[in-house]
Image (cartoon, rainbow, N blue to C red):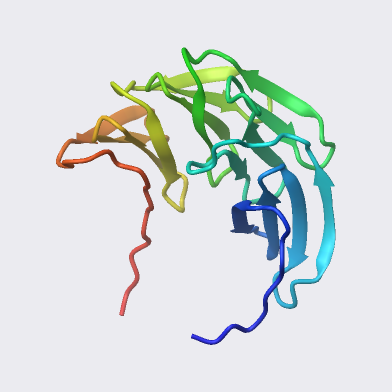
Length: 196
């Protein structure tokens, strides 16, 4: 494989994502947010949040596809916070977990921000109002990852309890709890079907 472009970032990178506007957003361990032109990696803009992440094996930062919102854990991982990425104002704080927040996510349709914790709980916050709207069925141990189907209809969470839960965001009902793993599930990814 040939490297077409490269860019050096001084601090460890915790998030890289291509947004709907075709910009590449890169967030480092100190929650410095940079927007790059996807084609030539030219820096377009950015800002500093100033939250230093001590652990970042899980998704400690999430960006909405439309670049309007982002979520992050606090430095001590006691809270998840939702921000408006345009105004830089905080919209909501989730401090309901018994223990630390383990990961965050924003669904592809920018309806909900999810805060997952070491307590096995996942709270969903309405992005516009900042209010708690529902919780996902709990797990017996830490939530390690959260993933969404591309169309935003499904959310899945993976836990240290070796289970994956699938939840419909259309009908607001749990679909399945997969229990076949022999070790903790650390990462999830939805794949889109392609026709050949």
